[in-house]
Length: 65
Image (cartoon, rainbow, N blue to C red; front, side, top):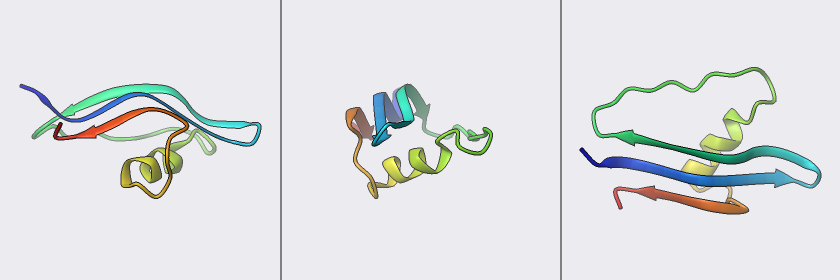
């Protein structure tokens, strides 16, 4: 089964603060996943990158190819 969402090596920083660094993962159609982590771990930044509210400094995000 192919991945519906594919994230490959995305990085996002704000000045000297590295919010997301070289993150890669894939989600297949029908999968249920969760996103957990402590305050300041980059969860909101990741969601904003996936939604297109922010642009990654590096890497790629693919939705259904």
